[in-house]
Image 1 (cartoon, rainbow, N blue to C red):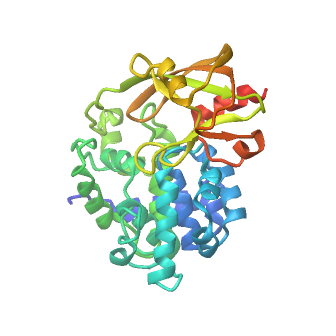
Image 2 (tube, rainbow, N blue to C red):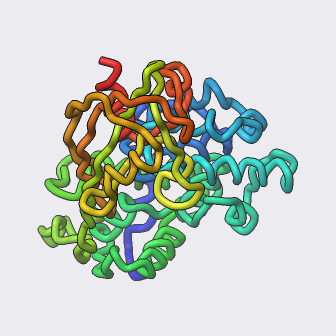
Length: 344
């Protein structure tokens, strides 16, 4: 890498971060377990959304041991609303591996920590650099955006192998004495200053060492090809209440999207027959009214949901649960939205 400002870039970035960094709860600790939890929560989720979840999570699971011992439904209830629930399951599996294989101490080297369930190159580098101050790369979208501009890297960041380019760049740039502040500084710079659109270049502590800024076109970088097309599915969600005030719920399968979460019956519109559903359960509908119609957007998929409230006779088949029982179950965000409407 032919970049003449390595020392100046390091010093300016670290000094800026140490003064301007946001006051976030996980920045008050170097406990690798707590850093691990924060990094997993922050994947695909905004910082302001994560803060209350992190604080509640730490109240219930302040140690590796308590998380490892927790029933999965109790864990998922704490994750309810954050989405990407496989993150929580992988975190618990990884914590159990630490207890079984490393005596309860999170490994302090990339080889061992990368063997843990759910710990990829970014998470490994974040834990190692932030908790242990090891000079290890931790490359996320913010880091790629910052360095693509600072170093004028034109590789397409939507191509998986491009991340290797940025990992190599971080390895050459990182401050070996202040790895924690350096990596967090890159992330913070991308979140607050070097934003995707309208970057605040005049406030940037490293602008004089940024080649894209000096060339006058920072917003042309990074290069990112278009995403794949979104898939759309319409569902009819049936909120069935029996004569005893109980509700019919289903648990999703153990694999795939929203695995193991609980939901009201969902029928794909135009594919699954409502009549067939009620025949299967040997139920009769006594009354029906429309509830909410809305859409829920995942990263690759959009659900269009039409929900209905139905008074039905009791059925032997299925899980019929009281309001109190439902409150204890982990449910995906669309179901929570419908449930809140029912309770209101």
